[in-house]
Structures are given as C-alpha cells and as structure tokens.
Image 1 (spheres, rainbow, N blue to C red):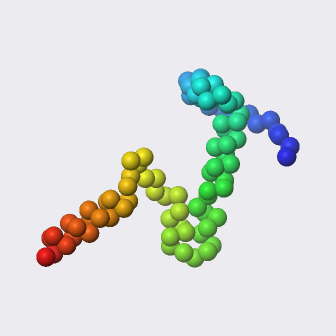
Image 2: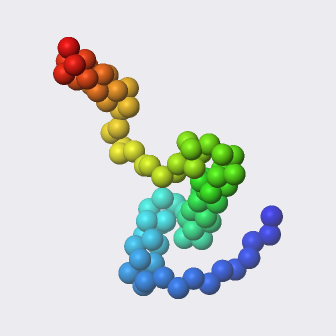
Length: 86
C-alpha cells in the first residue's frame, strides 16, 4: 500500500496530548490516526444498513462500560422480574 501525506487542522492542546499518548505507547501520531481511521471505516454501521436488519442498523450505536457483565445483569433482571411478578 502507498502512504500519502495528510494535513489536518486540530487544536494544539489536543495534538500535544496525542503526541504524548502515542509516545507512551511506543507509536507515532500518524500510526494512531491511521489505526483510528481504519477502525471507524471497517466498523462503520452504515455499511450494514442495506442488509435490512434492525440489529445491523444499530451496530456500533452502543458502547458498553468496561465493567459491563451482561450475563450478571441479565440474571439480575430475570430474578427481579420473577420476584416482582410472583
């Protein structure tokens, strides 16, 4: 693949923080930006819209918290539902 230069206009403070972050991860700022672009392009929920599925149209619209445990939350929901309806 061929690399091409890209000029971006970004707040100076954000650039400085991003450079520090990239350095702390042993990566270049260009690498971070490229990987971010790859992520949003490859995970674009709009590319699934034509598949007709409601679930597909919602892809990427929810980002769960780091400590999210759906199995535990589901168990709690079911237990609470049965306690309140029983």
